Length: 396
Image (cartoon, rainbow, N blue to C red; front, top):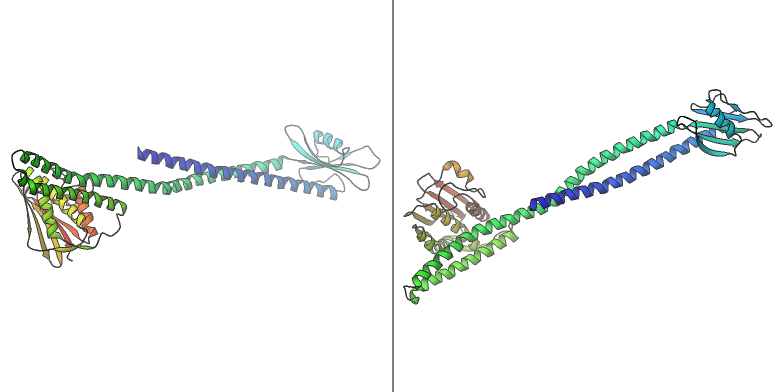
């Protein structure tokens, strides 16, 4: 629906822009035609005036023109011999008219322009010019302007399409970002909500058979999970508002974050009959955003648990090595095909085994977090032998 609206808006923009440019070109072309036609008409009048002023007889007028003369004191009218009978009639009547210019028909849809003048010696002169050459030039001018109009309109359509595409492009980008945010939010909120739901079910069952004071630890974990969910929402909103801005540069103990994630996800792992443990000998400090790092480790644990069979194991190991901190999430589940390693971090791709999302949006977000922290993600494994995904970051 949104793409259809954008496409409709683009087409409307193209039509409106091309229409405006076409109207402007039409007005300019019409103006040029009128001005040029008037200039040619005036040039013809000037030529006829010169012919009348310079003529000494009616025998040799310019091509396409015909002269008539009436001497003083006579009624006879001399006309150019090559003139047709119709032109003879027109010129014979023209010498008797007052000086001036007029147009008249000469038969067979022909039009002639007649200019009448009177000289100082009392003689009357008239010259007639066939308007066919003038009309022919005007027709050629109209065709040329029409071709120019069509070419200009085609150029206007191309320019309008390019301008419309550039104008609509930000809207399409905004729509893409909106959908990406919705997809990210849906993915990121699913796991914390599942954990909360599982823990709430466990608390509900235990509340019926255990004293309230023995539920304190579980209630504290529930509060912590709720806080983590709020942090995920806040992190998503910050990412949507400023995706390309640098992350907060604070010191974070990745080992502590790993322990928090394991504690939060333990109930979820038990629900799937998977043993989840963490191994971290000491502090492993990096610099970055705590909520983003927790989001990445949570996604890795979620993938591992989802691809581990009942009775399996998932281990989160945090170590320091060569100025780097590595958080490895290893499972002994269904494993992965090394040939599919290139697709691991593609958005919206899906694996073929397991309940988690070994492929898809989760690992794409992990890679995004790793790159934002100037780190990387390493993948190892084989079909049926489990998999290990390691988040490697520079040590603080």
